Image (cartoon, rainbow, N blue to C red; front, side, top):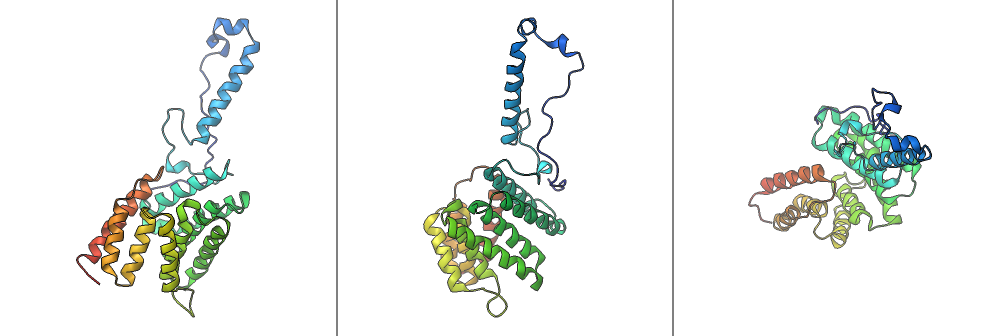
Length: 267
């Protein structure tokens, strides 16, 4: 999955091909004798079609490929969030870096579109913030500061609505912004605030892979290598998240890389 099609491809793909023979030749004889049942069977087939599409599955039962990610209106906010999650992981962990900036810009627009459809949804606000902050990291420089500010605003809005959403992910992501962003007068970076937010995230999700990884990464920036090592060990033992296989694999590799970086250092 190193190349991706446009997000505009519709999920409403035809589920069945037209038979090569006249329909009358394929109908069972009992169905001919009871034409009133035809409508019932047609409706049943339509329900199966919608069920398959709602689960983002092809009739064979295989999950659709990344090339079928869509920017069409989502059926519900859960589908919208899952679409953003999957596409973000594909961009971050599979797409060549030269292509990531344009893909993240497109994905951030899709996140804003979803929020227009489902405003005040904390999960979508969190994912808009994650996408924008990743986009800012790829873009770099002072021009990325507006993206960082937009991400901060999204996380803060999510916290106002439901601080426990996605296992406290808004605390984790906002805390990461506070220790990664430059401090005053350039931006809002603040290590004290970062620690406060990251520790709040750990209270909600003490065994989570992200909550422990970002806390460890912050501790490394503070040269607290012993505590960082403990947090990274805990992150490696975090349980798999449903439907987040690619993201978990990528994060675990980042954990291993950070452990290798700090080596046997002690604070």
